[in-house]
Amino acid sequence: MESKRVKKAVIPAAGLGTRFLPATKAMPKEMLPIVDKPTIQYIIEEAVESGIEDILIVTGKGKRAIEDHFDSVPELEQILIEKGKSEFLKLVEETTNINIHFIRQSKPMGLGHAVLQAKAFVGDEPFVVMLGDDIVQAETPCTRQLINQYEITNSSIIGVQPVSDEETQRYGIVDLSSSVSETLHKVKSFVEKPVPGTAPSNLAILGRYLFTPEIFKYLETQEPGAGNEIQLTDAITRLNEMQRVFAYEFNGKRYDVGEKLGFIRTTLEFALKREDLGDDVHKLMIELLENRLSLIEK
Ligand code: UTP
Image 1 (tube, protein in one colour):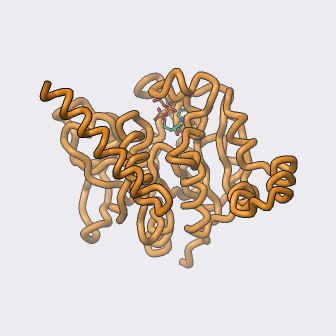
Image 2 (cartoon, helix red, strand yellow):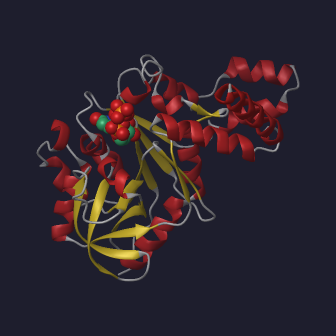
C-alpha cells in the first residue's frame, strides 16, 4: 500500500511553562529566544525543511505573542524599507510566509488533550507532533527522518534517543519488544516518567512524533493519567495494541530548552557557532571563567 504524504504538523504550545517563571507569567515559554530567535521559530523551520505544508499551533491563555510573531507587521516593515535595513526586513518577513493556523486549548489538561484539539485540522491524514522543548540539529531534519521511516513502515513512528539513567524519570520511556534494525524498534509499551530504577530502557521520547490519524480514537477516550493530565504516552500505548507503533532513534544533536540549564547551554552553544558572535562569546566565556576561578582561589 502506498503511504499517504505527511503534510501537516501540530505544535502543542499551551503548557504553563512553570519551570521558567517568572519569565512565563505574561510571555509564552515558546517565545524565549535562543540568541535572537524564539524557540518556536526553530521548530517551524524544521517543519518547513521537512516538507510540512500546514502547521497548527495549539495555544492557550497568554500566548498572543506567538500569533503576533507569525503575523506581518506593516508599520515595522515600512520603517525598515525607509531606513534601507533590508537584512532586518528579511528576518521580519521570514516568519510570515508560512501556513500557520491556531487553535486554543481551553485548559491545560495535558499534552494528549492538546493534541486532541488538532483532530479537525488533521482529518484522515498522517501528521507529526513537534514539541518546542526540544530543538534538534541534524543533517536531515529530525521530522524528515520520521517521515522517511513512515514511508517505509506506513506506521506511527516515535522519535527517541538514549538518555542517562538519572534522566529517565523526566521522560516518556519505551519498553522495546524487538528491533527491526539498529535504529528502528518495535515497542511493547511506553512508560511516562518512570520512578528511578524502574525504567525499562534508556530510550526516551524526545518531542518528535509521527501519528496515523487513528491516534485520535484513543485520545478521545483517554482517561487522565499521571499528574491528572490526559497523557499522550497512554494513548500511544493503546494505539500500539491495535496497530504497530515504532520507536526510531533519530540522528542529530538534541538540545533541551525546556529546563533552565539546558536552555543556557543551548544559548551558549548556538552563540558560539554564530559567525557574527562566536569569537566574542568565546572571549567572554573565558573572561567569566577566569574571574570565577580567581574568586575561588582567594
Ligand atoms: P511540559 O509539561 O513539558 O510543558 O509539556 P509546560 O507545561 O509548558 O512546562 P512546565 O513543565 O510547566 O515548565 C510538554 C509540551 O506540551 C505542551 C507544552 O506547551 C509543551 O510544549 N502542553 C502541555 C500543552 O500544550 N497543553 C497541556 O495541557 C500541557
